[in-house]
Amino acid sequence: MNVSRGAFRLWVVLTGLWLALVGFFAWDEVTRTTRGHYQYAAELKEKVDPWEAYQNKRPIAELFKKPSETKWAASFSKIEYQYQAGYDAAVKEGSQVVVDFPDGSTLNLYTAFAKPEQELVGRWFWENRWQRRLDALSQQGPLLAIALVPPLLLLAVWFVGRWVLAGFRRA
Image (cartoon, rainbow, N blue to C red; front, side, top):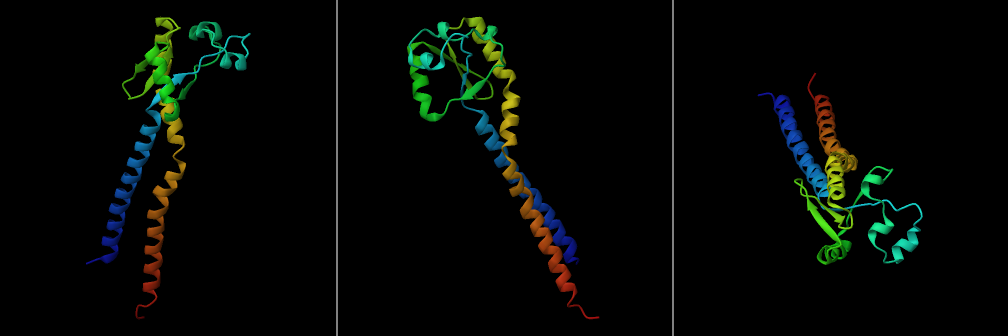
């Protein structure tokens, strides 16, 4: 019976299970981060003061450019849970519409934009899904350390223990 070979195989199996567990948690976190409620960050028209637009109750069409007329890339921001009630109220009053996507995310869009504009923004949002996933994955750096340090530390302790025990063998 070779204890070293058996212990190494045990380490390989435990490391595989550990990496699978940490990978599951990373995937769950990325999925949880990318799913949710999003809004389209519309671009203000040139002569609109942002503070005036925020405090004024002018129609959306007077404040923001149509999505097809914007000069910057489309931007989407996640709606935090504490603001969700306001967006739900806007959907009930009819100033916004919710678009569902197959990955479990939703997008709130202004109804002031025509249907083709809403479809354009929806297409941009869907095309941007992999970038959102990569951004969420890039935030998982600390999880990489959690995945690698314990197995490597266990392997180092094993080799040091073997080295110490080898010193007690009879000559």
